[in-house]
Length: 203
Image 1 (cartoon, helix red, strand yellow):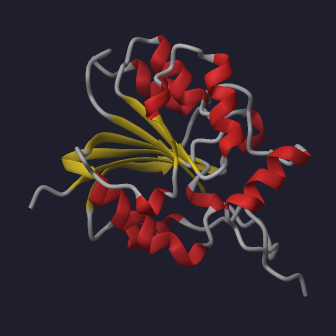
Image 2 (spheres, rainbow, N blue to C red):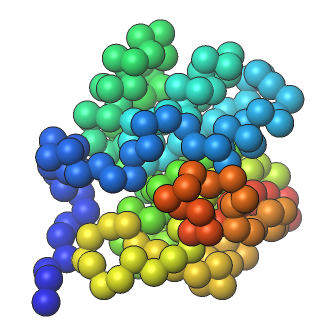
């Protein structure tokens, strides 16, 4: 039986250094780009990308003119790579910090989920949903992709699941505007991605 590793900053640094970054597509993925393209911006909405990795989504939004994009990760390497690719990305918007320690000061209008949820130990999923709600303004949006597949019994991420399971985590805090299989996933992920667009409950 494999022993589950501690998924801390050291673990993720080691994976980057070893090149074990199979989640990295090298560019923004079509479902997220399509969502961003239908926004009315660029504007000053506050956007957070937690567990951002190399943050191609942040790069895309920045180049589109969004000025209030923040990325958070526990490993410094991907944040440094983003800064190298996009030298004018605001350094103060690169948060080397644990997502669960972030404070909503002020709160965000949009949180973008891309392979962060599946990298967390499944036991943290209820806390993830609660923290997303905590960081968003009332009526704010949690948008992104969740893997809806079984990755087997490996003690290392990614970790999968089902839409039914995920609904239970988010239902206490969010209204469901879109929650269905992504139609425009990249070929290796066809049928395996659940596109979500959830609105934080106002009352």
